[in-house]
Length: 109
Length: 112
Image (tube, chains in turn brown, purple):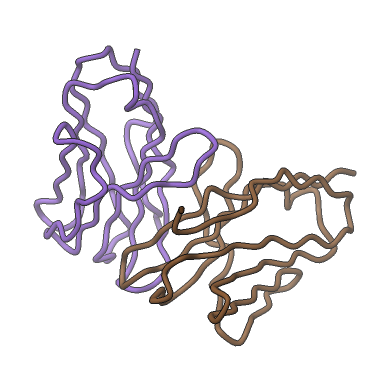
């Protein structure tokens, strides 16, 4: 079993839609969590950290459920520019970060 | 300020050739990481430095892979006797300890 699992998609949604991505992790000792965004042929870029209480950044909301070892990302009012691959990242300890394979999103006009 | 830079951006090597990939981290970042990313996959951890010390090299796929960071800033990933399965994007990232990592643009390696 992979340490970080994501639905690979692709998710194809119209502009303005709300879309949610899920991620599960296997190591209960994981300490911190992130969502990264990766555009085609570009490097991953930090989208947001994920906090235990849940956190929001504009149209993006991240949730963490430690009991279920589950992380989610919600994007509201999708824009064309949101089209990318979204990587779930789990920090096992200090610097041992494990990436999911990514969920691909395409937002269509 | 400047982000993480990597060179070369693209490298084509003949099977059996040695290659060296360079990473310049963000100034002041103590931690430096190398990842390998195959097409359609997330980055896979290769190795990690804290300053000049290589604290984890468990992800290096074989003894043909070697990384160094002799002065605690610039790092080089060397691959000896390249094989076709080494073809991938090699990403470097840097950070302060225990916080999110910032990635360079990667080196796209193609072994023919």
